[in-house]
Image (cartoon, rainbow, N blue to C red; front, side, top):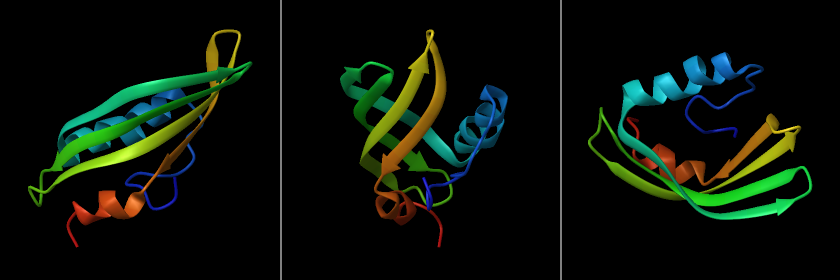
Length: 95
């Protein structure tokens, strides 16, 4: 999502791993995705949950609601979009 740390378009699982997951691990302690609710309609899967983490540079904790929208075809994720309150995430980050 625009405004999210490491937000952008990634075309491969390796791109997501290196460009997002590994980077978040370097910048945040205990980054966790908590999945609360799954809504499935054909190829569309929406997961409602939250992120929790503590920013390593500031020591500030965040706990923010998130929605992930996946398109799943033949058991594979072919598209993913994230919806999150990016201002709450930025509040925990360095200025």
